[in-house]
Image (cartoon, rainbow, N blue to C red; front, side, top):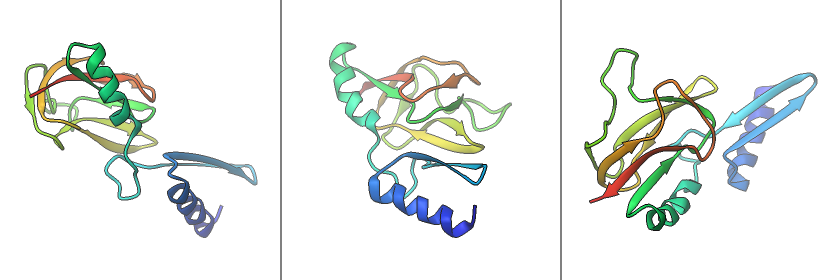
Length: 138
């Protein structure tokens, strides 16, 4: 597949507000996925679920995975985790990384608060919508 064709599909993703697209042509498959924080990315569905989950879980806000990938709690293998239970975070702080298709996607806090619970383990494969952690708004 030529670069111009890939660019055409990327523009289509932007136009239709898609977060991922898989195209198979001429025996070749290309998967395109928008990284969190990329300019093209619309508001992620987890923002919608955040409000719903607040009521169900005693004021805790659920941070969910916006994609399929591998959860990493730290920026490198021997580094300290971005956050731990009990840490205060501000809106926009990096909470973790989801590796998808060899791309490292930073997952950021939607709200300021305190990390109440980390729901997955380092290196765990997560799916779209998997609950990563809970934040108590504050």
